[in-house]
Length: 449
Image (cartoon, rainbow, N blue to C red; front, side, top):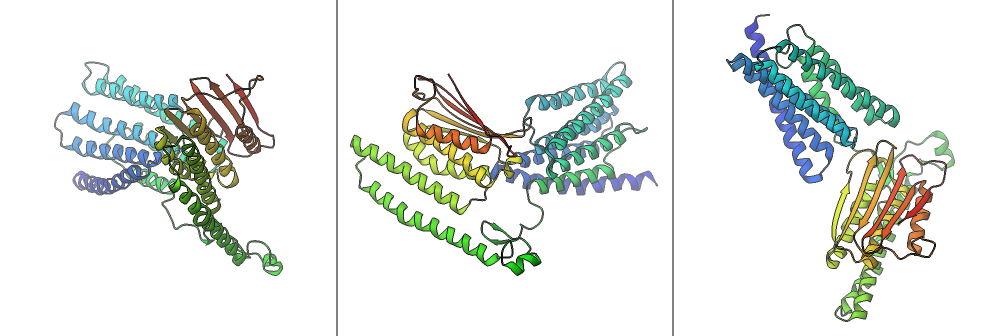
């Protein structure tokens, strides 16, 4: 093939890819601003890296200075590799900072070696060989690490991420070990960029229509012949819809009836009087509990992140009135999306009890709620911390209160571990660790000073 048509073909492909990348960057960036999903941010970073590589490769054809041209082409490749590694790690819900430190060190070391390769006075070939070895070793280590995570988790999401890592590793070997070195984007690289785009769409549930449902909060299932004959099982779609409708009616009656009465009583109280102020605070907590109960009735199949998000919305007004600053840190995407149903409601109730105790008794200036995934133990971590007065104790050393005993009971039902650490005038920390897959043993709870 003549080099001139080939060159213009490469440039045309790069321009089309830049346009597609610009659209993807705009969409993922807007999604990140709106939802703060880490995967959206990682997609924006990966797309930015791909754009840098395309621009650097195109510019290298126009730069007359050979050292600068070589550095631009290879540095763009290094940026793209680092951005893709970041996307894969975030997509696999990796939270260990040491892993990201290795990834960042790869980018810095690679850039230094490229500088020596382009402008070094001597040993330029050695610098290039070290750069190639560095990237191949790091890409291989990333694939092995993600492979271990995928083997341990066993979900389609992690296997997809591993597939992307292995595919990228193969392209790295093909690019970096080629006899004539890097010469701009290849067909394999365009294919890999498309794969990563599809991976982002799948992970964030943006690909394909939503699953068919019989009614809000109930999933549709195809009936079997036996279900049709007996009248039991998934084929009783009308009965399922009727149950869902009745649940929504009860929730609406509670909200409109009892909720309205509590609001009317609150309106008649004089909060300037100390006794009535205490009654008003108690009624506000009752109203908040009622609204959370209504939420759980109407959305019992939601995951733990959505449930906690509604709790945050419900308690924010009360916290603001008390002058308590809320710090909220929750994984909005990842394996916790599969933590649903009654188990999610149990975690919600534990968090609600913690916040209720803080508002009633602790008198803090700040409270922090953390909910994230622990990949090393395949568990959910919930922490609620405050800087208030601490919790009163019995002589035996365990904090008193039926609410705390209720939290221990809920943690035991979840098969989790509950730790309550408190110190007078310093604050309290409640830490709950729950395995994502329910174990066959009961949980344990500990208390320490």
